[in-house]
Image (cartoon, rainbow, N blue to C red; front, top):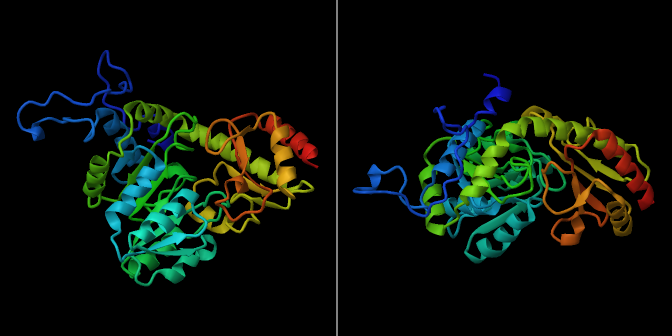
Length: 368
């Protein structure tokens, strides 16, 4: 079957007369489990849950390898780091990756005796820091600057040095980029964002090429309690059948908006991998199925950016991204990203493109 058909059925159980297509969330801390624990498919809610099982089967089909759900994207990050790294190991990390990952690495991990080497995503700069590394961390496209690195190239170089490779695939989602197929050892994402797309849950996952690391990740999840709620997982699974149609509209809207912004006075920089003259375009075209829903651009300063955001009628001001509603924020307000004061990250939603362009045009006029 074509992907557009398969995605509507990912992880669903076989049809049974009188049963729902997607079983409801299993709210249980304990399950009936007489005799030997191994004889029961489910025993205790911190170990497993049938709602997780359905969703994880769906993720495995998308990712191309077994997957585990976690309570958030950062819980998934912590799990990979926790099972791979030990004091004295070297972690090579993007200097422009998600701020919370950098905080975790440069704070807790360094205090634990892990050496952290930072290098930009652009230009595959991390390749220069792989000697002696235990784990190479990639995030492509990066958030919020939308830099793209060459996953197969960096995987080859890292493996040659004996390093493992983890890819934060939050922005692209496994629909449009499959790190495991490209050779990575771990593919992870904050399912909170584009994968589920409704801005109503916190969730993450990790996928691996085979079962080698799965047991270690599962033990980490059980022992640290980084488990997702059944309601959140059910909502996520419910959202997957629309992933293709959501992202198709969002990507088309994002490209139209990027082209529009390029033509506007007062917009000094537009980043979108789908633009032919974008620095990320060539690599993104090779390894991504589409270019994503994020557009980043720069206005002259903080005052103009704030006026623009306040004037928007269809654009919500919020810090997450990937949802069905268009949203934006001035990223410098958090202090964690090395971007200009007028840098705006725009997450494009499902609204009619003519309405969005009209709204952005009047907001830019107000900003001027």
